[in-house]
Image (cartoon, rainbow, N blue to C red; front, side):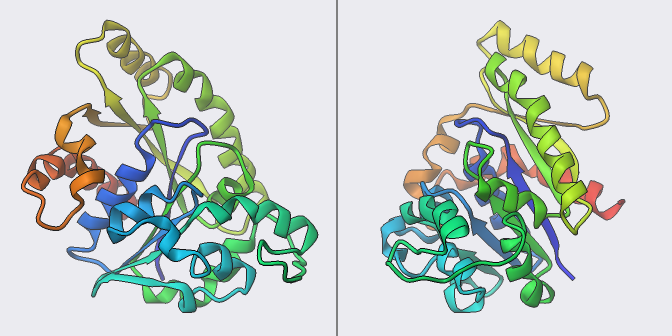
Length: 264
């Protein structure tokens, strides 16, 4: 049975898509992995596939949830990595949930908990993977709720700033709600400090503050702002001369995360 992990926080610019993509890349070296893009921006989709997200209109996670049929919408990245892609039509997910009307004009009524659509759709294929990773939008939306309720663990993404610091309590409450109302005993596996600007004293202060507030959750690894990571969206994982520099930053987090999961 697979282990499902969501990367989340209801704030943009915290490295969710980049972290999910790099983690999927690293895990796929030794495990069978499914990466799910639940953000209508489709950044994870473009990062892993090397294609624009609009290439997947009609063949995305949205249709997989509407028709309760994930295998038909999987995109193969490698022998050990599959992608369930997203595009801008994922923004119509809530309308379909509550009205049964799809963006294509079909009527596919949904009966059941609006928070468990993805979880129920994943159940038939969980045994095909060792890890399922979910990227989420920067909001406490139906997509985020579905991701949390479908997950065993959540990595809380923390960009070292005041606004992200203030977002943490509400997001932790959302994880608690998923644990209470879902079927998977969802829990926070850790808080990852990202996008750290070593030139800013306020970033250092917020790094220390979050560690004081949540000492048992903070990962030791701190991801700093570096040009090769920023250019990953441009060069991707294939034939990228800077890839080793990118991986070097995240490898310590990867090992920390694996250690925590394996010791649960």
